[in-house]
Amino acid sequence: KSKFPVISTKAEKLYRHFWRNIGSELYSYTWFESLANAINGEMNKGVNPKEYEKFFLVIANAFIHGDDDVKKAIDVAFVENLFFGVSSNASELYWNSLPEVIKSLYFNFHRRRPY
Image (cartoon, rainbow, N blue to C red):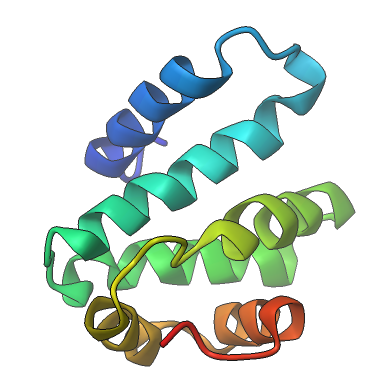
């Protein structure tokens, strides 16, 4: 959160709006879902994918080097919700800038690209 305060603040607002009454045992999953939704909003606003290249690298590295809980939260809560409701044009731009591990996780769940 501290490395990417702008998107983290947007995710926190979504989290509080949709998940404020959920117990703490689900916090990481619901927060990562909110984070994906915040990124989806940025995609739909036309924010240049280069703005989030470092962010996606941090997520990819956390998945590669994280423990099973970290991997599951990224895979299940973040990547599975990424691109939801995002236009094809915006999806393609962001897809092309994603690290391969995130693309692989997305494709393994959805069995297709987001565009």
